[in-house]
Length: 205
Image (cartoon, rainbow, N blue to C red):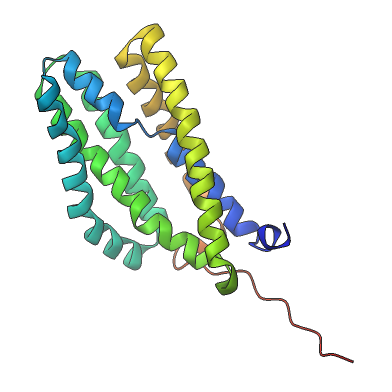
């Protein structure tokens, strides 16, 4: 517990933003379910995940460069905007089959932010001797957030349809994007994240 408390306020403030980011994420299985709704067969639905993974892998490097040059504020904004765009494509296109691939391309960018720059923030804000603990906290929180958001979107989907689930995701991410400049810790707004200062060790008497 002492190590958990030693991460610093900025780390947990960023963790809160990461939770908001994760709450907007639509699980890949729901994208596959939407693909089946618009006419894809079960075998073709695997292409949906393949496109998402391909876009995430291709965009990871330029997003990392963007994060190095402009900082997390810009990178998070790109990821959130991509997710909002993917949801809007789903909403605006109805049952058009191309919309699934268009949405997957945008959602791949959203995932690339999670897999790359977001992890670099965790490393940057955590004290050097607690980085393993920081990753453990990060993945635990992301798992809990993902489980919660999937339950919410699944419930909304079954109760009101797919468009309502995508609309809810877009609304949550829009609110998070608007609040982003005020939520980011000062230490990461314009540049690299910095860990909290280490406490000086007292010399033995």
